[in-house]
Amino acid sequence: MRSKVLIIQFPGVNCEYESLRAVEAVGLRGEIRRWNDAARAVKDAPAIILPGGWSYQDRIRAGVVAAKDAVLDDVMHAADKGTPVIGICNGAQVLVETGIVPGFDHGRIDVALAPNQMTGRSGYYCNWVYVKKGPAKCVFTDFMEERPADPLPIPLAHGEGRFITSNETVRAHLEKGDGVAVVYCTASGDTATRFPENPNGAQFAIAGLCNPQGNALALMPHPERGAWAHQVPRRVGGTWGRSRDGVGTKDLFSAGPGRGFFESLRRALM
Image 1 (cartoon, rainbow, N blue to C red):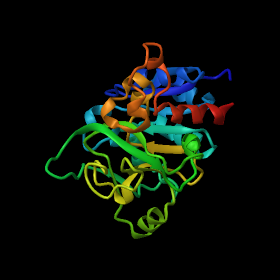
Image 2 (tube, one colour):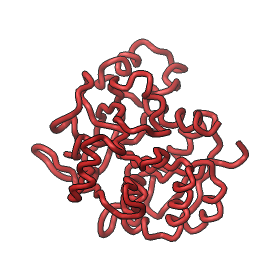
Image 3 (cartoon, one colour):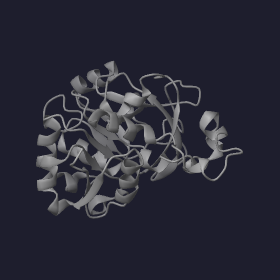
Image 4 (cartoon, rainbow, N blue to C red):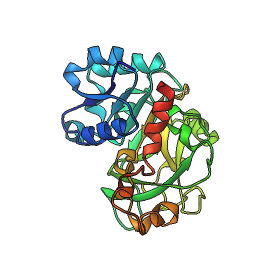
């Protein structure tokens, strides 16, 4: 693969280098390009990442200003052609604000990422949660196909992460699982119904939503922050939490649970 996975850096994002390291960890080549110097690169990129952070300080609402940048027209065209596109946290908010996701009605903004709805608190929330594969097929969740019900620990950090829609037609789609690629769940794998397992009150416990073609994913948790074993806290429990016990320094730099999203991308491109 001669071309590089493109990571678009908008003013205010702060996860571009973490995303680049995760891309390189699975053997892909990547590059970070500024939003105003990325249009040409979008056309040749084998895949596109919109990283997390606070683009344009999340003014008005998260992701909406970046969604109006001209380069997003090029990203939409690339997604339409089948280029894998993943928006992580703020990048997910950008994809929703462009209408690339969920994409039931092309380009129409049918879903919002609303302020978190939590029990006993409000605002920004940062923690590790569990997710599992949703019913929708997506190139980035291919690694979850073998054991779709297994809970996967993953970190998140956001203040506006609640997938929600007021459109009854779109709601019916989501309720059936259309576009629902990743779902919040309990440590035992049951779909999350309340805080903190559902960390933001998302409808149908949606953590990641994709377009109908399955090549564009808006994902609220941060897989790049869980791409190495040493990033996983013991308190998450289960196989991943126990894997931290008694391992040597070298093993701590082995793959973490979040790396699977990037491994799936690599398989899709090879």
